[in-house]
Length: 176
Length: 140
Image (cartoon, rainbow over all chains, first blue to last red; front, side, top):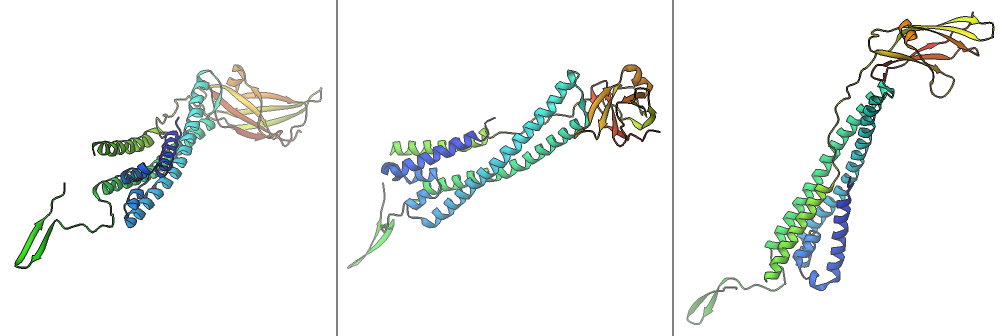
């Protein structure tokens, strides 16, 4: 059983990459990279602090919720697996002729079913946070890829009108 | 510019892969076993302990009798002494003849008054039933 190993490795990798990005000016300059590491960082880099707060809050809540529900789910799965081992052990004992109490068989079967149902519930809670995390990262990346950084410069409108002495001139600007 | 685009695409793929890894790497609960197909024997009932007094060696004789609703899958009975320790102590398993007789003479080296005997049946599939308890009466 992996028992959340992938989750821990992913979190450790993300944390290491975040530290690296802060330490490296070249990486820090890329707002997309920052946003991929933690939603909102890229928006903050571009000066969009409102969106940054929303994305970062959603991401942090989702990560914390995912970790908490994952721990509960792992515990439930462990409990279920333990009860299942005991229950299947009874089958082996009976095959070998070892006497097993009916009350033990019934009790373990009930506990195993309860643990399975509890794991079902915990999985639903965890999936909610996984979904929230996927949505947060998805929206965040779409936003950072579609929005342009706020450099503080006033952009020249694509179409403008210049007043001349004897009339006016319409100017159309093209960016390449 | 091309390298930046490749970096962005690679980054998106990496994030998606990491999230997929989180989902795939989590332990799963699955394969709920079905109930074991066991041969279950009925528990004995009308379990009685009769005291016969003290024999010539100073031992206390008792007779145990009981009934069983369905004896077809009963392999043997188990006799426990209850109350002498923290848990019931298995003291005897009946022989085939005692199993068929539904009776068992018991001799204790001490007065068992106040203690209890527990009796359970063991099926031919090695499954033990619930225990029926009877209190040891005072000797006459």
